[in-house]
Every structure is written in C-alpha cells, then in structure tokens.
Length: 380
Image (cartoon, rainbow, N blue to C red):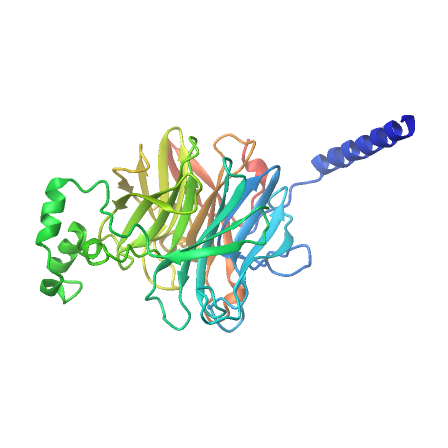
C-alpha cells in the first residue's frame, strides 16, 4: 500500500512539474495566412471547419482537401490542442466510403463540418453541408453523424433537406397569405426586382416546402440553456435560416426563422456576448473573397439587424482575402473570441490557409483588425 502511495505521489509531483514548466513556456504567435504545421510537420488540413472545447482540450474539425479536387476524397479531419497553437493530428473523424450508393460516397462534396457536445446524451454530434456525388450543388443537404468520443470515429446517420413541410415561425398570418399568392411561373426570370421581392416574401421557401429547405454553408451554436441551433445558407444561397435542433441534436424540431431574406449571405459564424448574438457572414462570390457582413440580435430567432463590415486593416474590403467559417470562444478568458476564416486556393485546395484574429470591441460593437502575428496573451 505504501509503495503504491509513493508511486502516486511521484506521479503527481511529475505532473505538477510538467504543468509549471508548460506555463512558463512563451506563447507561440499566431500568423494568419502562413503554413500551420501539425505535430508531424504537415500543414493542417481542416478547412471550412470549427473548434469544440471539451475537458481541457480543443478539437479542430475541418474538410480534408486534396491537391487536385475540392470533392471529398478522405472526409473530415480532427486535430487536438490544449493551447490553440500546438496541434496534434487525431486522424480522420468521419470517412467517406467506397460505395456509390452511400450519401457520403468518395467524391461527394462535404463542407463546413462542425461538432457540438450533447451533455444530456454524452454524445458528440457533427453536422455538415453535403452534396451528392456527381450532382454538383443540386442536393443542398445537411448531413449528421455521431460519436462517443470527441475525435471520433463518427458514424454517419443520414442526410437530407431541412424542416420539410414546415413554414418559418417568424412568418405571420399576413406573410403566409402573401406566400399563397406567389406563383413560381410568374418569376421564371431571375435577378429582376420583381423576382428579388418575391424571394424576400418566400418564393423559394414555398417551392421547397414539401421536400425541405436547402442547406449549404453552415455552422452550429449551443446556447446557455443547452438548446442547439443549425445556421445555414438556404433558398439558393439567398437567405440564411436558423433552425432549432432536437434535444439529442440529431434532427430538427421544425422551428426555424429566416435571416436577411434575399440578402445573398453564406459562411455564417456566430457568437454571443452580454446577451447579444453576433453573426459574421460573407457574400456569395464562389471561391473569391468579398466584404464581410455582420448582424446582431437580442434573440437567436431575431429580428436581426445588419451592421457595417467588421473588418479593419489591409484588404478589409475582402475579409483579408478570406471567408468566415467559425468564431471560437477562448476558455478561461472573459469576452475572448477568435474569428476564424479560410483563404481558399481552388487551384491547390490542400494549400488553403487560415486566418485567426482576435475579436475586439468598441462601444460594445465587435470588429476584427488585421494583425501579422499575435499571441493569446492579447486576451487579459
């Protein structure tokens, strides 16, 4: 017994010495746009992703990009870190499969994976944008997978459109009456003022009502009460939708709202500070960067108000050459958030780079300022 006690004390002392040593190590700088090596010295391959914090460790999930195609030839990668600068490759969290009858067949388009933890079920839940192999961007589905452990492997459950047969909860009786009058045959020519007005009123919501709403660029958000939300670009990328997830986070409840109808937003990233929800998005210009947009609301179901471009500094009108993907809350720091974005390189997808910058506040309004390099001691 005494021998076991001595051994335990020795192990405890060793751990304390290690932790003290780690705390004295200088913080490594974060340099946006550069090669970010993992523990194997290879550039981190987790694009369009997000970061989940669980039991003292950050887990970064993202798309594995190959050199010659943006289609999914591997799946979703996972990296882990305790300090947000040193990342360990945990391998493939969700693999595509060599079965063309599967929704996640090798060669499908699998984008924007995000993972959240369900405290009620003890499960880790991944949602992602999915396009079926060989179908281009026509499917516009949301896929879901689940795991017992943070890094996976994740088991694919299903994919599909969102909230079939359900109208948005923010569409009142008058709006539904207007919706009933809309006839797609009267708006076959897109991009006219009349067509845009009809989209604003719900033309595409009505078109997709039976089969479910389109879901492309997406993120997830878990509120303080444990309720989770799926935020995605819908209606031909013209309107954002925010949909409540079920208690197990594996399906939708049917409750959803529209944000910025006909506004042409994608790449949503969301966080909450002092009771206000903030969302940064991009316009829709393919792989090319554009000016960021920002919205706020006192309720996740809106109404949402638009603000000016939150980016400040060189190339701020192009989101520093990137596109938003996630806003990461730094644990243990008050009001500490990191804006995450991707610098896409479609001619060499695996070489796409990352932008991580601190979210700052002026008179309560968030902004993101370019920094060539910075360390986490930026956050007090």
